[in-house]
Length: 193
Image (cartoon, rainbow, N blue to C red; front, side, top):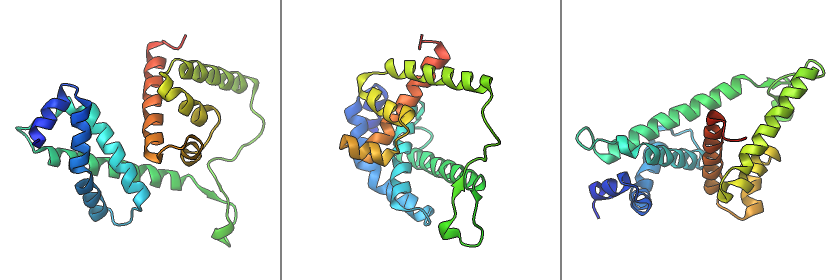
């Protein structure tokens, strides 16, 4: 089946067509990202590919074949996603504080330095946020509930979740992103009550 026909089917909501678009374009997308961003390892390349297709899936109805080919549109999303990822990583690195400047191999990294105990108000706000998060997780479809709890409540890393649930790492990432998006909608709409 031609890409144009797959795109047409994906626009009307055919998930199988979108999966075939993934199968058709994933290797080209990986090559493009590796060629443009030579300093990225395979983990980041796969993550960017996954995010790119997730964005393309959400935005497929905005794709206009009269303006560009699907592959060009997809590569533009990939480039922007890669730049966003690198920008996020650079911002995270700027927030690092090294405790041992002499020997960076043994240095510890902290995101912020605590200046004392939380105030009573901060404790209340934290507890309310935790309760709200719990309520939102309970409102998620079963597919996302356990993974969201493991990440957002238990604080497990993606790799730990993937190992515990015997699931692909990219699947874990995608489900967590979708769970967070659903939870954000619930919070915006006040549906978590």
